Image (cartoon, rainbow, N blue to C red):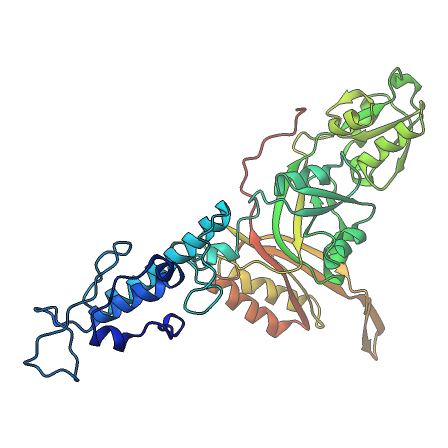
Length: 442
């Protein structure tokens, strides 16, 4: 209460010795908070029954001096220290509130000095922010924030649709390469990146697995997107005129059988992404070329749909991961998945021990992917009798259904670390639990 000390013009001792005269309007205007606090201070040490003020300078037999009047603006003040302190806080809040209201209205009674200070700088009690909780630090991935999300491709790509599903109403940032999407997040150009890692028909997208190891981003979520391919061409072009089909390599692989059934004995060329293929056909007015892309790409680039749903299997799903600069806090109140990558030096027997660390704890593995070790691709095994054997060295990517907040997962990784020369957790994140349905045209 040091900031609320009485000013030099009005002090507690003078009030205790003599009755306080009624304040003039100008004095009340300039020292509104000071006078009410002094009145409260006089009642602070009152006796519980008589209401008299204890003053060592006055003999006990002497009649108590008359009490100073309480201003109508504040009402009565309690008789305990807690009540007095609460009253001071309330009074300070009223001064700030009245000052703000006066500043808005531009009135002449603007409070500029309180106890000799220009401003009080106190926050009203009801406006103090709430303390952060664990839920504030680890929001669900589909929280609808307007983040900047990088994806590979151009507008109309499936990655753009995945970014919209993961972060509704986000600002999607197209990137021409997967590498650019990673760097966009690292350089703070984007807040997140949404990139594909595997498809139910085409398998793993190895380029992104290599980039996950090269960059220091963290997986913070996953999203699964049904893929619905269409054969697109310029308006007025029929299938008989087509002699070339272009699209992403994964899309070409996912539609290989259907293209043959359609009787299209055409050249198939791979490009960077599906929507980019549609844009290329439209921009260059290619009447002998068709593109495999989404129905949204047909709308964006003014192309006709020659064939709808040409994927070889209607259960065509691509799994995307969401990447961020910082990991999220793992939890156990919902299904989580954890992705790791490790390497070892002693052959397949160590791989069996690593997998057993999860099996003995009833932790389900959802994926295991091997990639050649870039820094040490060949391992030599010397034997004087049979010569020198050469083996590939691999990095192993594993996804398992458990959160890093789970003690089982912590113990499993502690055991895995004993058998491996390298171990890194790529992320522990919520699983995509959205209902699945076969892809169809919307």
